[in-house]
Image (cartoon, rainbow, N blue to C red; front, side, top):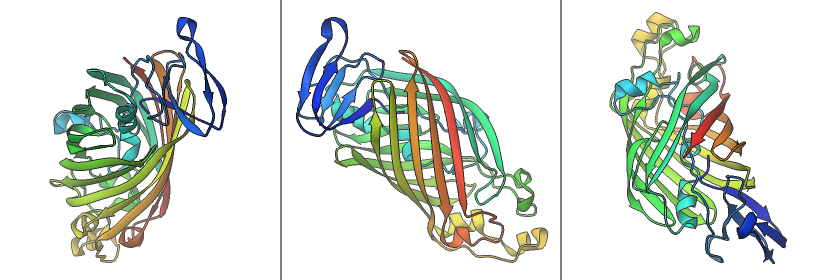
Length: 334
């Protein structure tokens, strides 16, 4: 859910605002118009630098990721079935950096609460899907700190118009061998806290590059990280669309716990022993969009396709290398 809606135009005359603030503006060349998503049509920027922003109530991107909370126990209470999810990391942060880039001042507090549902594989590489649901929330204090069911609980240590970087605490939800009969004999991967380092940079407006690394203290263990690029594709004051690709990498310890088969597991499951080495874990491409049906209520959805690569894709208990995830949420912002 982006902080604003985005409208790509070629040229022409644009109606702006309503009532006393209504007016027109000529757009003589291709531009990306950033407008208020509340239905007011307030223009915030054209090409982000050519015009000053006009009055607009703030909007921002709420996040959806089951399994968040202040402590690991709270994360577990809100959790969906699988971590990592096929939904890419950029899906939970899209719009925040663009909002910072296009606004002179950010509101002190930005808050969103709602309910969300996801359909995704029962485990990475599985061919059976399950639906799960739970609360979604996103609370921002300026562009300094955040508490989010998508990004976790963190601080933007470095922040500016074109960049942000920081640290966050999230959770690794692990995996239960009872989730699918293909996992029998492999044992459980326990829930554990996860530390995250992240950075975003807008190298060419409005495209954003995101890099993150996550370390699980238990569970899957060790390091996993992503490199993503995302940008708004289209929109208006009532809807928005984002899209982008993502690559996920992991070290040997992480892949060994998630996709490897030890001698003990081989004996219990019947799978041959398998050693999963470090490298590229998966690649994905996702599209997300939202629609405001009132001033403060919206619905949002995302569809992501993912393919397992390398040692992950060759694991003996992987049934499907190609997978998808679908997310739908209804949220209230103020």
